[in-house]
Length: 351
Ligand code: SF4
Image (cartoon, rainbow, N blue to C red):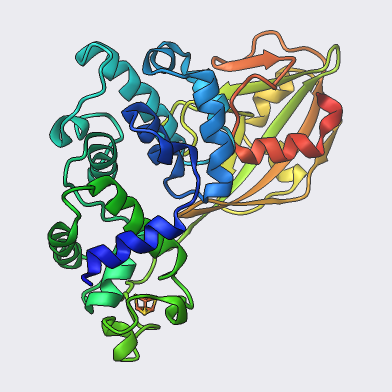
């Protein structure tokens, strides 16, 4: 039996019952693909359900406020995905009269949709023979077919894409794509693949040549940037309110809210905070002399590690706040990064 047939038989027996597997609706498939990128199924599934509940159709998502979309996405990370999802929904309403585009090249024009997502939607929703090549497929094919070029290189990707194009099931490209990703995610896993349960053991190049631990060839990961965030948690004595501001620059968490922030090259003490030029703004708000400094929160992102400290400052008045600083009484409806959420969970007395 050939590679493709064996794979499809395996998938038939092993496929998981997931809500987006029982639909041909391109909107729902797109939603699931965007949510599930860089996300485990257990983590992404509740988000998928929340989004379908709040925005059952493209028009509802397009009409939503960006802040509401970001709030629903809160905790899932990679917030660009949420912003692009929202933008693309508006694009579909405007450019395609609310109809999801039905060709690979037009799907590719949607904001935030790359080759992988376009292939997944085109094959699953419209039965078009476009193979998906995600991290799972790259790893599985590199081992099985003995692709030794660094897996992030254009050469390796082209070789694997060509192979995937040859092998795709033209009668059922959607199931084939789901099968290949599922196989990579469940059997040919990154560390200690389950070779003893693998139906391709005999034909696998890496297994036959004892190269399973060496393939795929990974180049060194990019160095992580270390950042020190000093948050000013300004609490007005006359009421239980806090000062926040919207993140608008091209940095992490664009569109979300956090506290006024001073970024430094290393951790600082309360005394050094008070000697900084930014402290003059706080002085105008008549702060109490006592500042409560939190423990350090370590927050890891893909290419960054953030060491955050929260300096809680009680002030007497909050008139004449700098531009962009907003006084809020309830942060529950406002989209904030997970780091801020973690801090607030520890400081529940505020809210
Ligand atoms: S034999 Fe092992 S390395 Fe080869 S495809 Fe199967 S799980 Fe992957």
